[in-house]
Image (cartoon, rainbow, N blue to C red):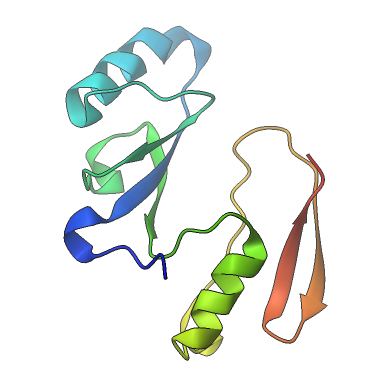
Length: 113
C-alpha cells in the first residue's frame, strides 16, 4: 500500500502569476519551498498555507500514490474510505482536455493527454 505517513506527506501546489510578476513569484517560491515551480505547479514535503502567498492557488495533501488511477481506487476500497466525506475537484494547471465518466466509486477522470 502506498499510504504516505504524516511525516512523509507530500503536497501539490498550483501557482499562478501574471507575466510581469514571474521573477517575484519564482523568488518567493524559492524562499518558501527551496525550489521553483515547473509549468505552474510543484510538489513539496513542506506545508505552506495557501494564503501565505498571493501566487499559491491550491494546496492538496497527497494521501495515496500509485502508478495509475486504478491503483489508487483499489487503495481507497481496501481502506474502506467513504467518498461522501471527500470532495474531488479537477484543477486545470495547463490547457488540458479531461473527460469524466460515472463509475461505482463516483465520477472518474479520464486523461486524454
